[in-house]
Image (tube, rainbow, N blue to C red; front, side, top):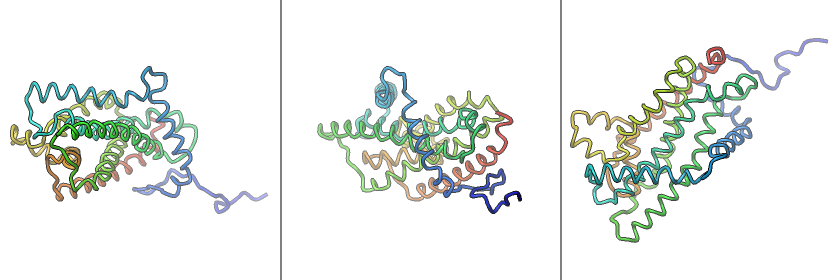
Length: 287
């Protein structure tokens, strides 16, 4: 009997890939597995916890209260007529989506090494599932924000939706893809440099302070004008400030910075894919 030729196989699994390989056809073939990973991420996060999904609500609410007490009441940072609690909650809600996407994807290889070493499937499915599953958490937090927003609006707060609100889904996508791209880069580096795991928590904490989560960008520019460029060129700052502008009608929106942020997000995402694809070929030997 003759050995079957390569043409007889439906699929060929090979370690040889293009520099940028985002195989949509293969991901579509594994869409059921993608949905299973999404379901796993949603179900197992708060499994065997006392409060369960209520943590989705507790975390942003308590963080907003702490920020309001420290930064607005003690430090006396003005929010431009917007209720400080609502101001902080808007920033925390969109920031949390980036944070959870980044933290989960940054551990892709180390967390899933056992699965990756036994069976083949497109590895990109795992970080993709994280971004998709965390949309549920973000939606719940956004719903809570909407309820609190309505409460303040009914009690005469000077807040209103801005005409740029139609760009809000794009802002969410930017946060998701930034978390995905940066997470894939860090995940690839962690396979060789384990101490990066320790730096992730500290780095995220520092990044939050540099992303105007708990203060207006104008406040930072006024107090530290010589370091204003750090905040201005931070894409996360633009997204957070723009979301506040859209939801609360405070802050600013600049089209040039929007184009810059979208471009930088795309670049980071593709760099993440390149590094991720290169690492997945041999990470099992170093993890």
